[in-house]
Image (cartoon, rainbow, N blue to C red; front, top):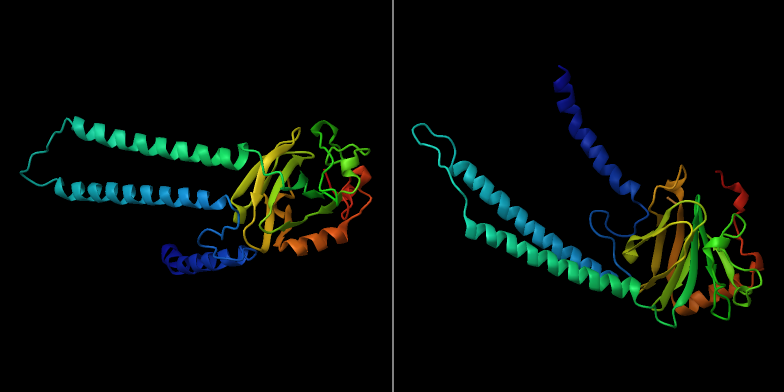
Length: 288
Ligand code: CUA
């Protein structure tokens, strides 16, 4: 009786669940069933290796399970037919070990090359510097003013009142302005990020940028950069479980034409950013 009930109800539960998935992911502007669109210069290499690995593992999966199925039928137990004992085949084993070794080596070398291109090589000199410091539960963002320079960040000076760890007297920082959970990047211009954390480990994650970087308190990450190739509205999500409010730790991120970015920046500056505190949202409201 009970099992018949579940047999009747379970398809509806599955349908309900599948129907709720897109509703849950409403913020994404493109397909929820496949990769979100890529707008970062570096994303092409990441998507390329994703598809290469998908094809390699897909072909291997089909090959292995086809052979398995074939052998299951061919060597099934039949009355009067004795079992076959096999010692294996050395040539076959050498072949199916050597080929994956070269495939893995190729993937590792390619991945390493791309990683150093994305993170280890110095960002272009004309990159826009933007500091993003995570806290429970939001993003402090700091932009340079007219001089194009950010105040120097020192992880040792980071405190509740000074999330960026800057020196109040630093001349480069006098015209900086800050936002809270609000980022605007110019399109087709490199952006160099200065990432940090005020309290616990957070992670800077924008799927459309194919960009993920953990932010461990006590250090400033100055090697992450990107170049958005298309305009749009995205979400900066925290991707490390950082506390009870983790799920709501996200910032609005827009990529806009350069002129629009400049107008936006002009409207924000010059805030009295001397103390380096976050602007809009009072820091005191954060519970610990
Ligand atoms: Cu910050 Cu999760």
